[in-house]
Length: 373
Figure 1 (cartoon, rainbow, N blue to C red):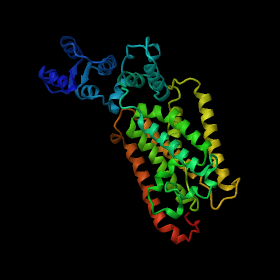
Figure 2: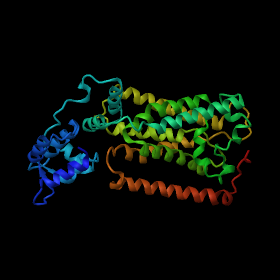
Figure 3: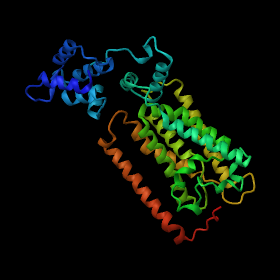
Figure 4: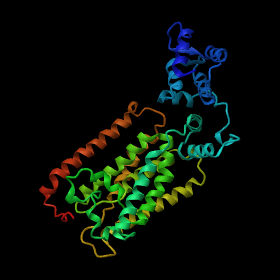
């Protein structure tokens, strides 16, 4: 029986004859038993918790609809959290007889989600289709582009020092600001094998699990927002510098995830979380330090300024603001949250400021930018 049939059956049985908006838990349980409705165990547990959170042991009709529709509002989560008893089933770590893929899904749940209710909800309703294609596709495209330019230039490390590298139509260069696509496409170019390897590793280790849990739309929005903020920030703060690499998007993902772990430290069940947190911060700081060194102390003679490091910092800011809002809203509608609109307003204001800056400020300030290649 599908969702619409179940809701139609509830209406036909007149489980709420007085139109109070609530359905008795015992009445609904009898309906499920008599019609042998195929509700999965996780949703049945959620219904029990909802009933336990109500003084009269009733279920809100709208919450029932949201549950069957696989939607959860903030009030739904509060009802679960304030329930008078814990969900009756054991934790996911006690689930026996899981296959390889389901064990991986369980691993992702414990890596990303801070609450056992959320972890079980994700585990039981997860489907392998659609797969996390965005982060995998971006990483594959970056590798292919790097291999093509590496073979063409016969250079695999510090490619930006090759005179032909900056002629790529993908690189952001201040002399080509009018070509708006470059503010995004620079993410496919990398300084060398070391930067590509670092970004690809983080995109696969952190980006793919995040996409599995939060979905393609949210994670792609966060990643691209970090990329765009990176190039626009460089155009404002380091006006003579080009930009290459997907570090803006990578740092948005990583900063959002690390901030979410810190804010939910007690609930996170990932092993060795303190050690992993320290290692992640050390690696990210080292990458920023390497970018600063290449920007101001280039090891080889160069025809112009080297790529800026400000994209890393801009991506981190996007992650802590927009990214943390997204990750803390698992299975909740972002448009229902005031914080989401505040973040969008702030990001939109930044975009408008950056656009006007790129159109007018370079001429007004008399910025001496290197000639475009």
